[in-house]
Length: 291
Image (cartoon, rainbow, N blue to C red; front, side, top):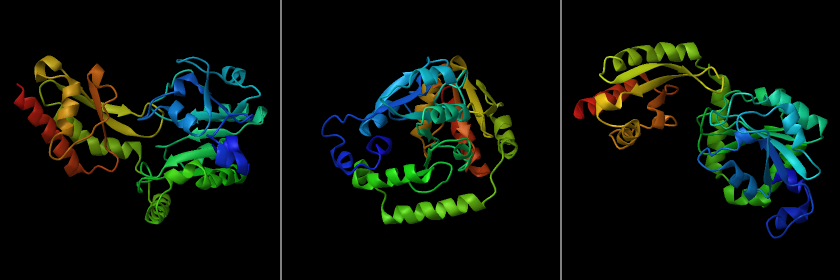
C-alpha cells in the first residue's frame, strides 16, 4: 500500500474504492509466492497490489526478475524464508541491484530473520520483521528502511494500517523487546547443537525413531533436531504424531512441514533442557502406547 499510495492523500483514502492509474504490480520470484500461514498474494492484494511472478518455481535469476518489470511495476518483493525455494534463486543483494537499476523499491519480508541490519545494508529499501519471532516480543511488526519509504508506511496508519494497529502496551512491549534483543548475546548454531545432543541421543534409543542435527534450509546459523519415524514400528504416521503432540499436556508444536515425508523438526531456540526432556518423554510415551 505504501509504495502504491506514495504519499498521495486521495489514494490513501480511496485505495480500495476503485482502480487507480498508477503502478500497482509487485514483482517477486515465483518460488517466493508461498503460503506462510496466509498466501503472499492475499497480503499483496489487501495492500492494493497485484502479484507478478518472475522466473519459475525452481529458479529466478536477476535477468528473469528484470524481465517481469514494466511501467506498471510499483516494487520488487523478496521473501526471505524457509518456506521459499532456495535453489537457483537470486540473492537479496542481486535483487537490490535490479531494483536500483529500474528505480524501484525493494521490499524484503524478513519476518523470522535475526539480523536487523543485514538486508538494509544489502540494498533493501524496506525490511519487514515480526516482533514476535526472533525478537521475542508481543505480536507486532517492525518495518525498517529508507526514510521516505518508511514515511509512506507510517502514512498507512490512516489507511489500511488502521485496522492492523498495535495497542500502546504492544508498542512499549516491542520497544523493550528490541532493546533486550540488541543487547543480549545471540545463541550460536554450535551452542544449539551442544544443547540438543543429549536430546538426540535419547531419541535414537527409541524404537522406530531416528534423530539428527538439521541446519536451517535458508542458510542461517540455526540448528534444529530432525526426527524421522518408522511408521510400521511406531504404529502411526508422522502426521498423527504431530497431532498427538499438539493435543498433549503440555501441548508441543513442532515444525511439521515435512510430516508427509516422515520427518518433523524441533526448534531448540528459547527451549530449555528440561523442556527438551518433556518433548522426549512425550514422544517416548507415544511410541510405547502404540507398540
